[in-house]
Amino acid sequence: MPLIKSISGFRGTIGGRAGENLTPEDIVACTAAFGYWVLKTTGNAKIVVGTDGRLSREIVSGLVINTLRALGIRVINVGLSTTPTVEMAVVWENAGGGIILTASHNPAEWNALKLLNARGEFISAADGQEVLHLLQQGGFEYAPVHRIGTCEDRTDCIERHIESILALPSVDAAAVRARRYHIIVDPVNSTGAIAVPPLLKALGCTCTLINGDITGQFAHNPEPLPEHLTQLSEAVVRERAHLGIAVDPDVDRLVLICEDGQPFGEEYTLVAIADYILGLHGPGGSTVSNLSSSRALRDVAARHGAQYFAAAVGEVNVVEKMKAVGAVIGGEGNGGVIYPALHYGRDALVGIALFLTHLAKSGKSAGKLRRTYPDYFMVKARIERSADLPLERIFSFLQKKYCHLPLNTEDGLKIDFPEGWVHLRPSNTEPIVRLYAEASSPEQASQLVEAIQHDILQA
Image (cartoon, rainbow, N blue to C red; front, side):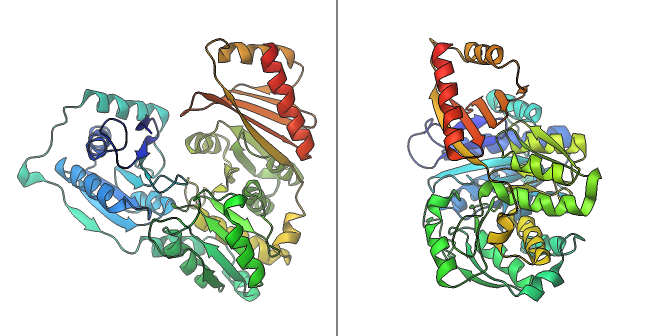
């Protein structure tokens, strides 16, 4: 798999031939470009670095840290950590930026450099283009030997992150402690193992870990989808636990399993938490999710007299929209919760605390709470892109055919039907168009997909 250089960072597989994968040469060059950009744009010679638990972490971390030092940058190394913790550490340290070494839900052979600005948020598209331009130019000037940067270790960042969560007025630790929840946690052999249990302990929960050794040898596919979480579901039922919690390797996605072993639904993590937060704020609140997320969030917002807004796919786009509309809660339907009262980044840890507070105050089991939300079903498909049928032609045809329906062209094309919606968007990494559909039944969602696929053949 070739190295992917994008506006959000750099990722690829470790090992193999130079020029084809994420090699040491690539890691050094990409780090130098970002470090130089931070120096050039902020004048702040301090960058925070943290890593998830994957196999290549020590090699990649060493290359990144020492390249930054060679530029004369002071590195704050938080070591094994979570993406949201690193994001918050950038602000705590008054740093010029941050680098998170994680390939998120990708398999063990992958790694990536995710880039943060001085606000601890993912860099914008415009900033990403500048970094890519610097990478293409090359020729960076490194510091003379007497001005080489330093590296300082920080070991208390996860603890500080948890303390910040517990200090939130919306987190009622006493209410959660009174319920004495027993929870099974699957951190898939990564840093959730050192972040989720101490949070649950602080909330008075007992916790059983499965796949809790930080080996980087993921016990299953690390994307927290139901088909990968059968072991967690079985453990919840076997141990008669109140809840199952799964996170991805960098702990920015939160997926829940009900007491009967059934998935709460990754789309419904944000829905449930938004229900709680919007209830606190009342009609003045608003929420944001991306265009490919469930309609259930819009329904819940309407129930509270709140506004719902959609953003283009991608965390940076959701954050920009949230800031623009003053949203009190938002995120993405993959289990990514963004709570601005803490910070602007997907954060499974704050998601856990907010969900447990909501669950405790509701007096319901997870399964009963889930049944209070509307049921929608999503179907995902892919369409191979062809030079014989340009994307512009497909979109133009569909826009004309469905001009009588609400259309959104902010990110590909989304069509809102009375019974559901369809979203088509080109992939950033593959020569395909992603096709998502949601409706009130699996059959209706499949019918929407089939109808659009038939339309494309007519284009």
